[in-house]
Amino acid sequence: MTNAIDEIEDAKLIFIIGSNTTEQHPLIGRRILRAVREKGAHLIIADPRKIDLTGFASIHLQLHPGTNIALLNGMIHIILRENLQDDEFIKHRTEGLESLKAVVEHYPPERVEKITGVPQEKMREAALLYAKVNPASIIYCMGVTQFATGTHQVLAVANLAMVTGNLGKPGSGVNPLRGQNNVQGACDMGALPNVFSGYQSVSDPHARNKMEAAWNVTGLDNQPGLTITEMITAAFEKRLKALYIMGENPVVSDPDIHHVREALAHLEFLVVQDIFLTETAALADVVLPAASFAEKDGTFTSTDRTVQRIRKAIEPIGGCREDWRIIGEIATRMGYEGLSYHSPEEIMAEITAVTPSYGGISYQRLETGGIPWPCPTREHPGTPFLHQHQFARGMGQFFPVEYTPLAEQPNDLYPYVLTTGRVLFHYHTGTMTRKSPTLTTQLSEGYVEINPDDAEKLSINDGETVKVASKRGEISIKTRITSIIPPGTLFIPFHFVESAANILTTSTPLDPSAKIPELKACAVRIEKLS
Image (cartoon, rainbow, N blue to C red; front, top):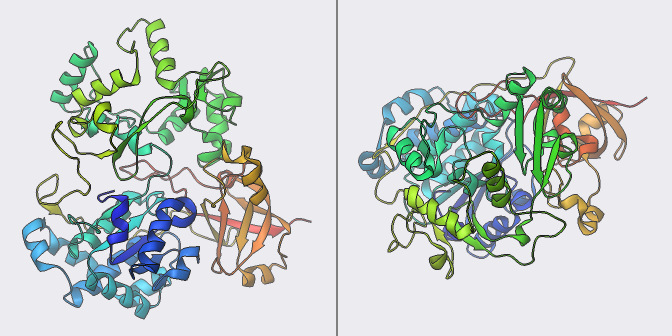
């Protein structure tokens, strides 16, 4: 996030696109509701479903799945046509506006309405409101990123924020919400195939030299590794022989589950390190029992870049160990002594030594509260919001992007678009939440949302078990007939392995840059069981 979580309540307008925030991130959702109900902030929602937040919204833009870029380009078109752009911000802080103008010129409201299904007047109302009310915050999540055009969708979001000057000040910004706990921290530490910690590129000789000196090694590779989706493909093709999975459950969470299972079966060796015997761990040659959050010390980095201390509440039980101890001992037994740490604090000291954005963070400073990076020195207070005076590259670059339709379009055999997501009572693949009697009492099984008009055409009743099928497989699942979902679209939460939505989703094509598959939309059919 460019801005701090608590700044959400300072925004005069909040534009949420691709995020069911009150169910996926309920604590942040509460801040949004406080901003709207107690402080009078305007709320714009862009979502194919009538999520709970639409009941508090000034405007709901109910667009077709996968048409975010067309909508965002259309809003920018209207803002520029109405001369509501922030000329001072554009002049002094950005470059490339003319190239953006040339592209969005082709997205007049009448064309965008045909693409997105959003009425022209409602789109115009949203664009004018966003441009006029300041500061405005954009919040998005995986309803923007989990597409083959995910990178371009993020660029379109940034274009909208920059053209209105909604960056570099409190209560504004481009604010992605991370999908899981400490994903931000994991990425910060280099759990990505192309960077070391602090997003230092593996292709940068200076960064490699620094890391080689810190780790007492030579010859670090200057080529990026594989992403998760690429690893699965490589395993399927037997180019990847072994896989070590930590805290992930791809047998439920990854697209095209049948393909994932087959790929993992092609491995010569599979290791899974987790706190429970997940569906993926059940396939492993070796399972390493890891400690939970309550059994270890360390830090988490929240979605707004705030580094926070966590403290052990109980000693690890049942023979499990902290992740860093497991990894360190494996490295030692393989002949490398460089991971023989004695404590998480010692690891943090190394992090600060080699990671400029974490350079001023220490356990001692974290005793008094979290610190948002960048925090380059011990005297630096941390950075609640980014880009106050300039962007990382100097001038902010407009990147014009074109709308591309979904890779898998509905057809006669698969006439519906399926979109997937989360619900309030369960989390990700249910590894933890489905072991809670309280939460399973609230919701114990999956369901498919279908619009009443579609249900009537198919003679499907509420609560009836039906078959939903795609090119990749089929599942049996109970129906939930509701006007939350528009005609022609279905919704399935992906938490439930018994009716796994990701049996249906597609792993191709990938976003060219981020290598993300199109998890949020695929073509399916729904039919009665006979």
